[in-house]
Length: 153
Image (cartoon, rainbow, N blue to C red; front, side, top):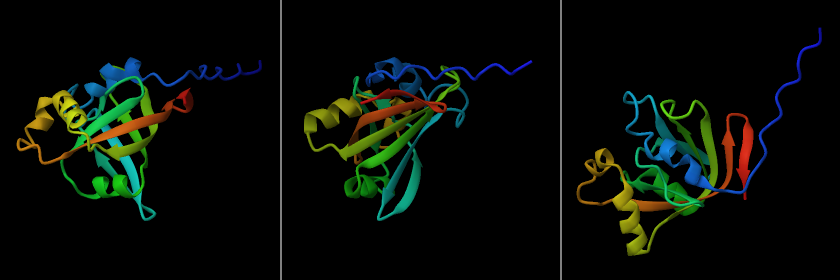
């Protein structure tokens, strides 16, 4: 008997991140510590870096955001090269690993910076009580769930 063909990939839709809000926004606080998280991959001068981002959020249908409190490699990389990837795993809400291919930028606008800060989960705010960090706005161009592209600009 011949093996059944693999399932077809899901249809690719336009970017609409709102359907991922619960998964992304709660990755830091759902489940056991370290079980769920957001990871950002950047590159500066050809040197890759990865960093955990507990403040990662869906800001609107087109954008993710996070509060960059460490002001170290990730900030420098975003300033030098806006192309990045974000991976989120929140097995409490969805078994899939989501990957977002993005362009990130440091926010200069005070109103947008304040809007992002207001949405940061409290456990992350507690690590930067003086608000010395910077807000990062992230435009998403492609979303993968597992091995399949599911959204693309």
